[in-house]
Image 1 (cartoon, helix red, strand yellow):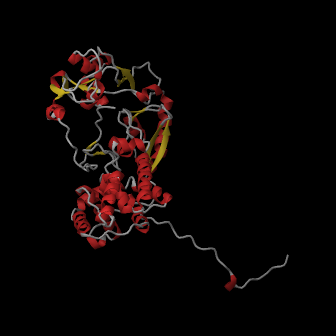
Image 2 (cartoon, helix red, strand yellow):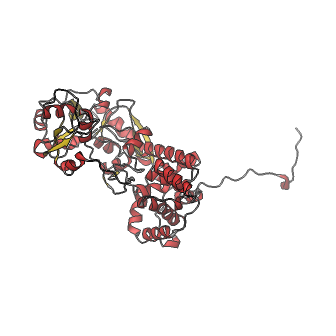
Image 3 (cartoon, one colour):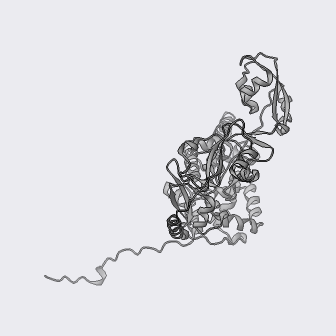
Amino acid sequence: MPVIVVPDSAVTLPPLTPPPMRDLWQRIRLGFKMPDLQNKLVDDRTRGYASQPDYLARMTQRSSRYLFHIVEEIERRGMPTELALLPFVESAFVPEALSSAKAAGLWQFVPGTGRDYALEQNMWKDERRDVVESTRAALDYLQKLHDMFGDWHLALASYNWGEGSVSRAIAKNQRAGKPTRYVDLAMPNETQHYVPKLQAIKNIVAEPDKYGVVLPPIDNAPYFIAVHKTRDIDVHTAAKLAEMKVDDFRALNPAFNRPIILGAGGGAQLLLPAAKVERFQANLAAWDSTGQPLASWTTYKTTPADTLAAVAKRVGIGEEQLREANQIPPRYRLAPGSTILIPRDETMVADIPASSLDGRFALVPEESNLRYVTYRVRRGDTVASVAQRYKVLAKDLIVWNRLTSSQLFAGQRLELKVPATAARGRVSRAVQAVRKPNMTRSTIRTPARTKWVF
């Protein structure tokens, strides 16, 4: 075979593959695509964040669990990586954050918008707090808003204030011959500060040295891996098998409302630190070999005769333990027909059935916590509409007022029993309509673990 000698100068070497970035912050910086916003609000917020190094450190430490996944999803969609910083503004990366407007999770979805974006909300779990599902929904929503307005600042304002409100503000400026940029619109105070807050975080991430900030390093690698589970498992047992503290397990799996994770309905996705997955699988196999159950709870549907004290005594636990497992606050009782958790007995091996996924769970105040309210019927009112307005049962409203039909007439007076805290101001609200103020998704944060009604 002839040999052809090629001069060295003619040899074309394959391009060297650059080593992967080890720093996630640098990866985020390289993906910035939004135009910068520059105004006094941005300057004030940038200085404000930079002057709170401890607060920034806590936020960035929490974010280290979630940021890689969020950046991966954003880059996969071709979206600007500034959006990965949005949970700093929305929830401070507290996965169980709950606002006064009932917005929940890292991305702060209100219940209705969560349902619009296929986030399941029931007595067992609230996917607004699910790290993976809420990220998917948030990016879907943000992309829709950008497609609608063609501008990321307006899309972000809509995420905070609602697309309808932003559309009306734009139309108002158009009628007045004014510009329709984000900075030109008349918006609530919270929305005016919303994009400047994100820009301030971007400024600090882009140039931490300039602001005297030290960002803790975050590896450019997956923090968690999803493990599929098709059998019921207690939260504490799952954490034990993963050799994790329960609080750390919940930080990755904050969507689960109860002390048990159900396998019914296609199974559950558990998020575990990448370094813990092999240990979890090995410990799970060892646990299964002993024949010990993974779950210690089952369901029970309450009857009109049931009280929490009686049910607790019957199943052999204290009433407070039963309340804690089912998140029932003091001075409230279960409505008949509610599905609750009770301990499994030693002979019970079957998992909770799929039919329990749609179980009803409703609480009503104890009688001592009720107050009477008088309501004057308005034109168009029905028993159902009044009951819905005051969050009572229509059949109770009929009994309280000895009604013989569901028809009402204007001026008729009705007596209602409502929780004492809700009774304040109800009388004046009953006789005249009250116009609601401009509302946004308030960013006041409180713990989200307690869920009372589903």
